[in-house]
Length: 213
Image (cartoon, rainbow, N blue to C red; front, side, top):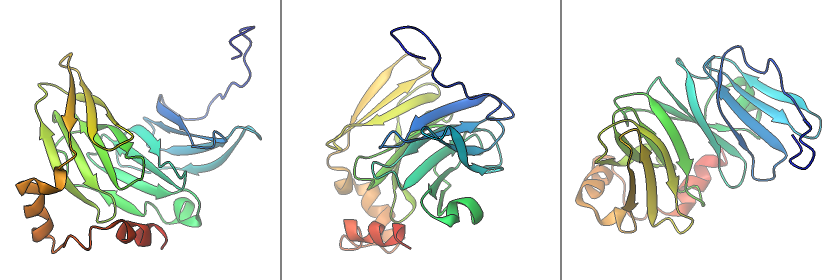
């Protein structure tokens, strides 16, 4: 819809079989991703106004949200099946072989929101279990669970400098979390040791190698 003359520029009808729960632009604003209660993901091209990719049964329950990395190469989806999945949208793997990373065992309830850090080094999610999870993207595990909300965490955001996380909840509050020293938190160090990780393995090159497979 054109804001100046209030005419519709594009109307995408029958894009999903059930309610569309979320949509987002890729960083170049050339494509749009949408997710739905029908458990599917669709990538729509703005220029050609055509559906480029459809992934049916992407999750085992309704998909609640989606977000691109700032490179536009990867798309994360969160679901009521308590998991998040990261998809490589620039390869056939997205179309034929499923998610390149599935993040599980981070929430005890439906996941309602997700957001990448600007450099894609970590991902955050909010859920029905009232927690905010911080995920190590390269190693595919939950680094930390932030607790404090009294109801469903509806939305999450990360500051560009990666020092702050913002969460919004059904409990009518927002919380600002300082995560600048997250790698010095004893529980995070304990998780790393349990997984056999070292500080050297946590460097940026590690997750870049994962993404380029």
